[in-house]
Image (cartoon, rainbow, N blue to C red; front, side):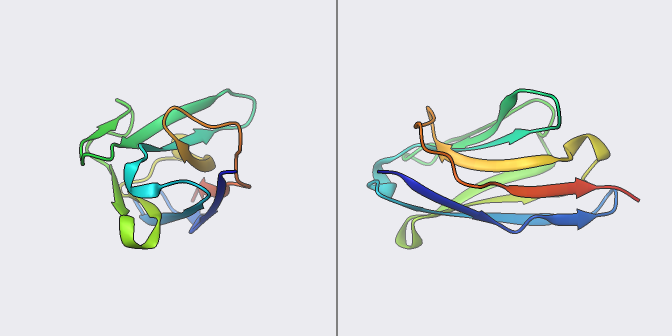
Length: 114
């Protein structure tokens, strides 16, 4: 069973940065494509970025050039570096496999506000 634990969220001013982390277990991490997702209040959960086992990455248009996904296979951990944050980035951020498994973590809240 996949288990995912996200951390690193918080309150940040517009233009600020945060680094999210996600520790995964129950999967062969180095062989698994991973993704970061986010859900804003009243909206559906959307895919933000993916990190393929082969090293390639993809990004939603709304975060391209500002967010960077990376992974550390030795630690079964995937990261999301978020720069130039905007109020519209406010959401609960989740990691999961890509395509997502049925098991979601608790997520980590990111609030961008002055």
